[in-house]
Image (spheres, rainbow, N blue to C red):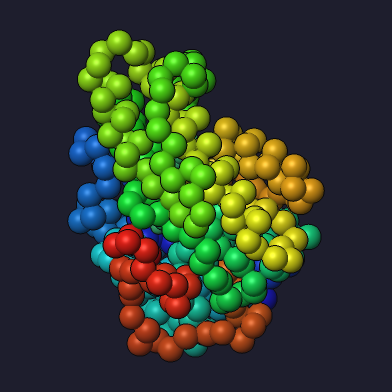
Length: 341
Ligand code: ATP
Ligand code: MG
Ligand code: FE
């Protein structure tokens, strides 16, 4: 089957044509860094307007690159949440309109399921169940991925997401936007042992995460004026890595029968994070799977692929399905001390 995937939940607009045999026939992506950079973060109204302007042309460009027409497409997959609601609506309404016009089925994809299944697009050998560390701009979770649509959340953050911590640290250090890659770049020139920073929740019994205290410590280190920004960046990154590793190790001990340790989401593009997790998997005698960098940050190939997995399982959606700003992958998971989902 050939799936058209649409993504517009944050500040990346993207369209892809993906086959269920894992061939990516086309992928077109437009970032909005320049539009949001003056504000130091994503402005929802600006993002929604940009999605409206660019998504249609990206769909046409993807079809042209694949040498295909809408008649060749078997289903249309669009992100239906979670994310900035204005942007999500642009992609979902576009998907609905294309489905209505062509008579093809719609697959409403949870953006987090896109991230969660992206490692299976990259690696045909990755089987269920696997332990997933989902680290992105809005989420930091450990999930037992048991099958398509079958996720159990083992842990989440009680305050900030990992990517959010990178973005805030970049802002505090004046490294620019988007923050993750900027912090990683600065960190290569710094000493990860230079600045003593906390490792929140490390050693605690439940594998949850916390990054707010780390951000405050970065602020104090900056205001002390005695450390180079590169040293703070490197020390911050090391603290995040230490937290991710400790918490993931704890979850591995609790997760039974998993075939692999898997990482996905924008922060999975970070080399220190990838290397540390690879080491952890090696110590546990387990396979490690991380998607290529471009599949970690937001893209439409992962939405097309999640759409393909759902379509193969017979999961399509009615055209009146609603966009959702919040949409946990594991709807049964309890709230953790006021944490987001
Ligand atoms: P969510 O997926 O939770 O809805 P999102 O879609 O905005 O949020 P992603 O696109 O998956 O998030 O990831 C973006 C986040 O990843 C940003 O916070 C960004 O700073 C971070 N990030 C991207 N590249 C890197 C990197 N090399 N190192 C660390 N963080 C990174
Ligand atoms: Mg983005
Ligand atoms: Fe994302």
